[in-house]
Amino acid sequence: MTLYTQNLPWWKKKEVDDIKRGIEEHTLVGLVDMYGIPASQVQQIRRNLRDTAKVKMARNTLIEHALNDLGGSVATLNKHISGQSALIFTDENPFKLFKMLEKTKTRMAAKPGETAPEDIVVAKGPTSFKPGPIVGELQQAGIPAAIEGGKVRIRETRTVVKEGETISKKMAGVLAKLGIKPMDVGLVLQAAYYRNTIFTPDLLAIDEETYYNNIMLATQQAFNLSVNAVIPTRLTISAIIGRAVQEARNVGVEASIYEKGVIDLIIGRAQQQMLAVALIAADRGFELDETTLRAAAAATAGAPAMVKPAEEAKPTEEEEEEEEEVEKEEEESGMAGLGALFG
Image: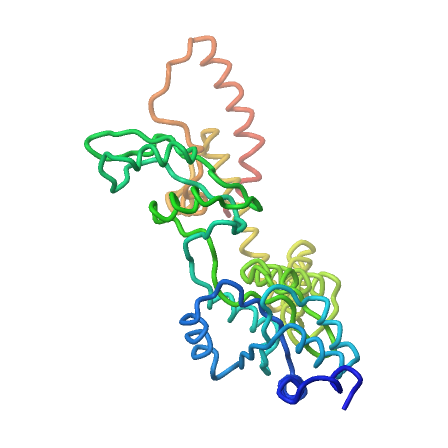
């Protein structure tokens, strides 16, 4: 018997012992707020969590007694007790528990005096109400309403209660009639104790998609760093070797090193360069054989045609004479090179 429980009635001592046993037998204990949850929903939540977690309702003072009896870091859970607390025991990790509890929540109508968990917005548009006193009720609640086509219509979208504000009795009644259910009702995790650490909801409410994307980005960046810095690992060694092979081939091609695996690339590049020269030559009036022209055209498929169109504006006589002289000079100086190129 400890100092905290020695003066308690026997039934309270039994409750405290049950709480301590639950904490000692499970890897995680959480504090949840049960305020405002209908009894029927509590029973449904218990059934849904039966295979993974156990919910134990107890007075806040008895929970404090049990935590103080155990002492150590688990006793710091006392700082998070508020409202109508209960305990939840499980062997799951806190992130999975938080996710499970979020799924127990359902949307319900607001009660007078409750605090808006978020901005409550009434959207413009038609309602199902027929003309009557409802128009005055909406207007008194600050919701612009009018009668159109024999129905009550909200004339503009309006935020009627801001996050953190108290919901009045009049507003609660109007929201209920409009079918707006702003309240999330379910087990609200106040704190969880897991492996000597306290986890609060702000640490557990993570965006899984963003978290996953960040991990994937970090993985890709680490992979790239390993390859670029040539730090071989089991996952990157193939990419490092593949990159080294490619770079070695590029050096072989640029330096014209005739080795197996490189010679074909050197010949291929030379052929591309030859065909490019052939197109330039054809553009300047040199006659090439049909096979070379077809090969050059195929190599530059999709590129703008370099051969002059058949019909062009006729030059003047002076321009023709100058052009003939230039072509004669180019032919004399260029045929030797082309002869060597094409045999």
